[in-house]
Image (tube, rainbow, N blue to C red):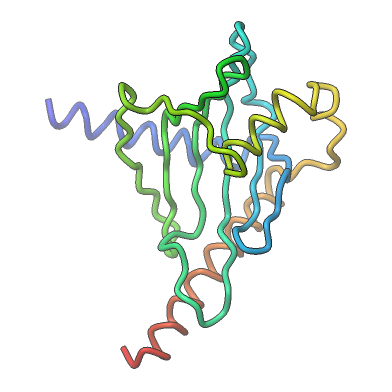
Length: 173
């Protein structure tokens, strides 16, 4: 049983890693204190009833000499209910400074929550439910795909690794 679960987890991680490079990632939000958010417009599904499901990639801001978030970037499978103003996180994969993926345990039965004003989920709710149509999403500009996204992810991972080493040197470790 454990072998089947290990094979399934490894297969899922390979598909997710490959999909990060093949996806149509649109830069949607940059908060100077937070980082860069990308929406995979290819994954955006209108499931009916005001419910939208999509993949998000987040690269936290790497501030030189300051402890980081503990990961280089993360991919989240998110659901937003436009009518009830609720969000769901289905899956989260954090990639560390060495490029290794670490899936986070997500408890779906407790994972539906009200969207807090001025939060990241609020941004997605406004972005997808209030201000943009599918046509608007297509007009965001040149997507970051393939080798461009691969380079962005590699840079984000390198910046995180270099900053972690700098922070450790400052701390005398």
